[in-house]
Length: 194
Image 1 (cartoon, rainbow, N blue to C red):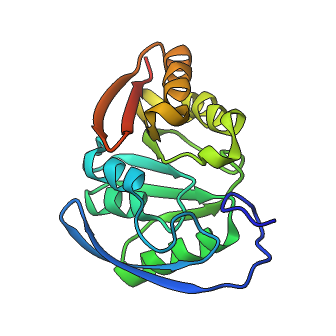
Image 2 (spheres, rainbow, N blue to C red):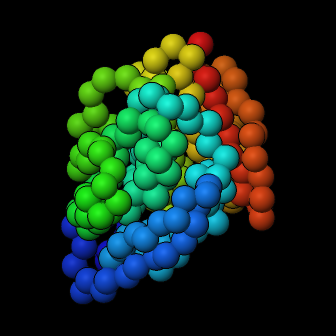
């Protein structure tokens, strides 16, 4: 059975292209079936892209990057982005999208943080809720050691479909959490490393 959080997918590849505007940037993004929300930018990712706290010069890690939309927007905002995903199709499409949009970035096939080195000003994620709470909470727990002091962990989730538990996990790990945006049942939670 293929899941978007699987490493290798057996299903036939179908090509897609998304033409959209996110945070004022006109984007033409290439996608493949088997990548999360491959036909359109999902509402959760759009909300995070439109509201994430990113500053020029930030080192940013996009965890579970999919075809790269969050990290692409962060790059266009002036950040230096590292994109990670376990899904081989996602890695291929992120690389293709960076080339097509002439954006620099590091793209690493990594199961969660297994291949990640260094620290970041910000970690952004639309976590794979379908993979289960254990995986999503691991993303939160392991984020702390990959953030600089005062680094920001930013996550989007549907509040009443697991988001509340993830928010509690962020509070437990970082000692703080706040909601910076909400729309259509989705919320963006942010924690700062003390």
